[in-house]
Length: 508
Ligand SMILES: NC(=O)c1ccc[n+]([C@@H]2O[C@H](COP(=O)([O-])OP(=O)(O)OC[C@H]3O[C@@H](n4cnc5c(N)ncnc54)[C@H](OP(=O)(O)O)[C@@H]3O)[C@@H](O)[C@H]2O)c1
Image (cartoon, rainbow, N blue to C red):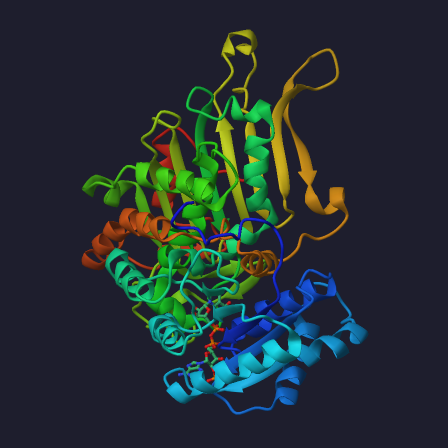
């Protein structure tokens, strides 16, 4: 057995359990977690013996808490209207527990309450603790849970289990992430640790594995002989809105690049795993991150670009610059845009550049991976007035989830010009339903004890190892901000970075 995996939890049976949400009155719980749990329940995917306990500081009765959750579900559930009959019985399994995170008594009472639920609801001592709280509380809560025997030892043939889901961010850089990991692992085994990156719960991201390894036509050309370069774009129209204070601490590299974008890089570039177990898949992903060539001093100047939006127009409407947003320092040096070129030094990807760009207040919302193939030998069509376009395979993560392939075709008629056309597969129109929300899948997987779609500690560490030198360089070298207008595709030097390699940014 792999020492990083929980013993005996490999089958996809779902055990009875209690889900305890720390931070149950917070934004994430209301907008994402509770609608996801409701949806799972309505679709019959929760265990038949299930209870949910919300843990937070404000005093509240169970009835008040249930009423608030209902409002959240009405506002944020992906299926409308709310199923009133289902909700009436489901809410009986939901409870509120008031305590401060640092008060021992709160955990003693929680332990008693959970035992009562085991008796009443048949949840058999199985626990999931979802830490939807500011990261400074992770070590404290985990330590208290351990102290009051709410986290169990991981043992062979143990009847009951306990798992902890942790929200990002996992540290602010390599050193703080290592420190966080050291304090967590004193009380929690890696197999019990579920580090959530909601990108991994998206259907299109999971489909990357199926697309690559269940279709022989793609795998045989998925290498440096056939692929010219890879682009990953995570573009948002929105600015930082009400999250000014949060973003001032974070910046785009920590918020998007270190986690979501690095996950996409590793899924696109990984070798086929020996099987689909969590350890096999994550072993291959880590190898990719470990093969990324470290940035040099010249990269920091030319191949890692940061930007911050100034004022401008989005869909014809005037919007303020980042420094004019609420709770933002008027001289802020925080980046709202990052572009970078990186190389994966292994046999498959030698000398294939990966261009990453992510930003706020860009012209449209789009998360896309674009694989550009090498040019066909040009001699047959040399006489055309324009260069033949390369084939591009685009995997759209959001919106309009799907896959598109750009190929060249002859336009009908005697003059025979060539035109690129797009073959387009869209999940929504083909399968006739919107894909489940990422949190539905991830909460469900945590109940099954399957942590394939959660980040392992060495993945997090490897990603920070690549990116921490960038943060250090930035903190010692200020940039002239703002350097792009809202509603444009980012700073000019990001275009120059890719142009000097003879390429251009694209989304299909
Ligand atoms: N919101 C998002 O979209 C989002 C996205 C990705 C990751 N995250 C991460 O998810 C976590 C939660 O985010 P959030 O936006 O939901 O935070 P939030 O709205 O600020 O909620 C924080 C929650 O923690 C509780 N809390 C804070 N200090 C406490 C204490 N000392 N004792 C007991 N309860 C305490 C609050 O309870 P009271 O209200 O009762 O005080 C509240 O329920 C954060 O780590 C964040 O980085 C959030």
